[in-house]
Image 1 (spheres, rainbow, N blue to C red):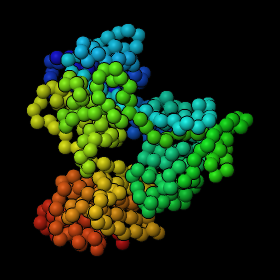
Image 2: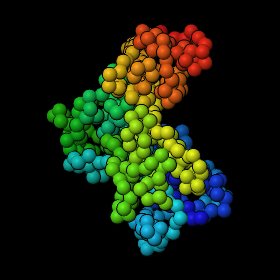
Image 3: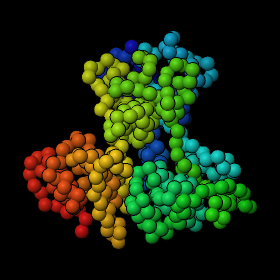
Image 4: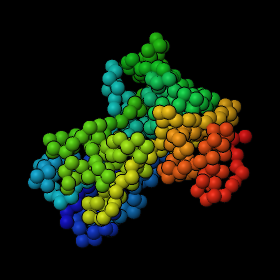
Length: 422
């Protein structure tokens, strides 16, 4: 059996390892298009603040790991996939045959269509090559503008702020992390960042970037401008679906997959950022570009490629946990609320403590929190298990801090007196 995995990120690596474990005699080939060993993009911020070396970003620390696992590593870019011939063509003319194929090509940064976005000194923060460019400039006293304050932007923000650079953040939406947080939570994060010396412009767009001597001038739609030594763009990502163009595999925003992570071709599977699979909360198809989902996808796809029975996907729970300069925030499921549902909310603005719960009938379907860490697993567990809270729903509407009590009472039939916001 010839298994081929395109993409050497977390989904691809876990899939290759699962295939090797499940089918010891199979040929497993992992194709990546970057010159480095397989690494985690989520580790790049730690590299920027020198908590780890480049080797610390590698998904597997042992340099002989893939050889020991008998997983062949091919560095190259896939030019096309021929599903009828079950063959991949690489740039340069080489071909790789497969019996089962996994597409785990991830996503890439999207550059906003503004004048000057291609100037030297403007970069994304997505690859190790990007990280090297940023590390060379983001030093104490350097002026850095970060475009975008979404989930990825805020991860980068942490590293840029810790570098000692003078950081200005520009976000076009009216709050930070707008696809993860409501107005209250997003603006609390903004207040937190500003209290720690970061300048944050929300409801603001960069209209152009231009050279200003050795520096850059970042022009804003407010009419003002910000001088910068470097501009980091973090304005969103896009799934890398181009690899399947011309193959007949069905795509929408991502590559469409069923509950087995199988595409419209029975011998081709997809996983990670590129896969458009079942959303746990809505039942619709969606792309969830987060590493835990990628790892789950990769393992599940590999089991089905190897012929395992009953390996079906229940759907991805929308889950984000973010550390922004020491303030922990999280959101789960339908954090924005369900049609006709109820909600509970409690805020301590001075202490940057916040919790918001969203219900449909007596089931918790979404949650948002700031400054709270001990209940993160409880929130996810209640949402993912669709636990019926019964009388505890009304108690949580009155006091959402009783979430631990509700969890224990609903899942273990015991009471527990806990408070998480004082």
